[in-house]
Length: 140
Image (cartoon, rainbow, N blue to C red; front, top):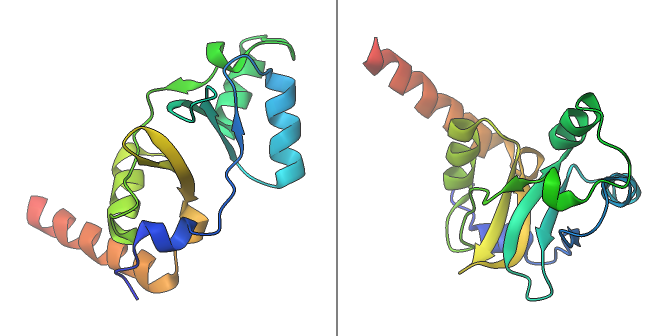
């Protein structure tokens, strides 16, 4: 099925959400404990302020940032997002075009969940691959 709604994918989700004041150490520990590759960053109102991923952690360490560095200083601010009414293929296109593996799901600016490339099924990935191949043939 290639037309699953994002709302269906995240319906039972409890995304990892930390505050901008939380530390790099807490984020990495929480990601490890929850076995996830990203943290959504928000204040108490659950409005998205940023995303912190494994890539951000690697960059922070490479820059010599310490474990007590706040997420506010190492997160990706104002990340692209997707609404829960959109479809799986919409999310895959956005991630493919943006070059990232995690996409926050928001209603307005309020966090609903997060999707990652691993949330999608074979037919959805096949459809993206077919579309990409078609666009490449058209472009050349």
